[in-house]
Length: 107
Image (cartoon, rainbow, N blue to C red):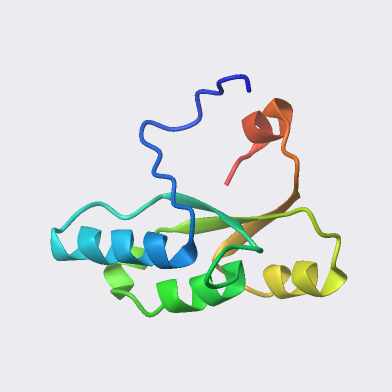
């Protein structure tokens, strides 16, 4: 995999629950909220939309600046429609992602 300089800091979580626990700890310690979340629709323990609903329940000041990019290997039109209706979601991208796609992201 080729390295792409995309962000100053990246946090990777293998499940929605793990990510929610991480964000709750950030809030408790007055950490900075994420500017951008890449969110896969299919994840262990909860899907991406379920994760996003739980994320939105966190502290409003923490989540207000966060933008979400949905990733999917499915071409399910219902997922795309649901993503387009959510103001947190700024893009819907099909996997696999290319370096060019990542570099073109302007949120």
